[in-house]
Length: 198
Image (cartoon, rainbow, N blue to C red):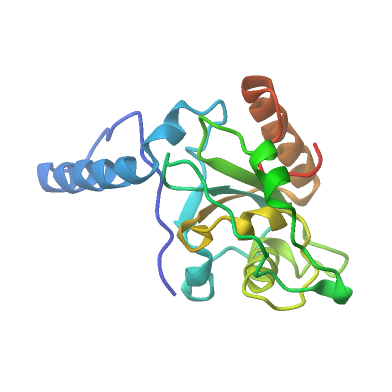
């Protein structure tokens, strides 16, 4: 499986030989070009890993543990939206949202488009890997029950979205998600674009 990508380290490397430092600096600059504006977000994303497109999730070592995840759009260009959602119709329900509504919900000045959580579930077998796989499959048109975040699939560049995650205790996943959304709301005055509740 592919190795998760790390977000930029804004504190700088503290040890290692010069070659390792140079490699680390080069990688940080590369990632910073992709996700640079994220470091000015009100949410601390330094503990998140991954940052892969949804299509790469099956080949990525996503943790099976509970946790939270954040979806980002790696561009500051104004969004364009698809008239019809490509996401699956779970129990026959069309996930399409009117384009006028999507424009009204868009949050400018941020690359974060969704914040979610993954619990262990009753059997203890769910977690981040299962939840994100359901999210991916829903966006790929399969009738999977993942209505949360469904607005992201009407972004015309949804294939370019990146998802990063952070492992938490099962009991802390929901509280962490709520706290992250609250921090976002306090800064931007509204929830992330695809979040339907606090």
